[in-house]
Image (cartoon, rainbow over all chains, first blue to last red; front, side):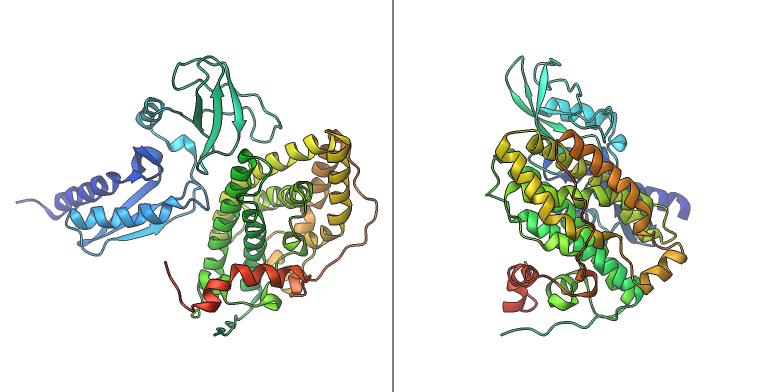
Length: 167
Length: 258
């Protein structure tokens, strides 16, 4: 017979795994755990509450992520799961897992890297091309297809690519 | 059929959150007007991205205002069901987009302030405001970088871009003083360490402006007469037009949801 504690820890793990199975709708290779968006899973009896944090204040993917977490938890047998948004501490790309960075690169998005200074103007920064690995690349626009990405171009293989901005 | 305005119990803290939320929402809406119209695709995306950040910040601040008020209001009602006189944003952010230079100068003046202001607000004794500030500060830093680079490109660009950027600075300058004003209610919050005195960042704000405009070969006006009113609900004629568009769906179909 399992003790209550063991049962709770198993249940919490099951809830975490269910929540972590949700992928970012904008970057379908990254789970919300890889991204660092999944912050906490709290179990109270059979009820579960998941805490997530937005990448950017206006990220339109957050509503969809919250909905998908609820669906995933209900599928895993949790009734009336709740999703709570926490703002503090503010999300940073430092929370992205090593595995997440590798998945991004393989998907064709250059993973975030430390920038020189976020306040320096016309800053030069070397971002390696996720396609051919060359560091002869140039910034086309600091703002890309989603809040979290910038648009770059490789001068070696001539491919444009997304760069996941350091934040 | 028109739908009635909501009433808001404007305690100093509720009013504080509404003022900052209104700044972010109105400026975000103005930037979103460029979507599909910007001079190039990259800027179309940049301005829309910045708009999205600002509207996100507004949502957090409205939700907090509603929570502090503790009545029946929520972020949507606060955004969609208040009339012009109930809006408390800075006159600066409601000014029309004008040409690209005017939009970027407006953005530069505001972002240079927001960057410093939110950074200082991260030390607020109010945990929610400190968390919103931490999020907004990160975003303001690159909004400012984006605007500063454009001020330099435009000012130090062609005769035409220089003239337009200088005209925008001269036109919008009188709306900047309002950023640093507070009323008695906000003064009490400042004394309680819940919010910071915006006047405390004015010196560094001016330094940012001087540094960037010098590099851009542009001049800051010497005129120190400033226009005020937005914080007290007295707006330019432009806000009503903006709200009629922003609120049209909720005013026409009350309670409409996606």
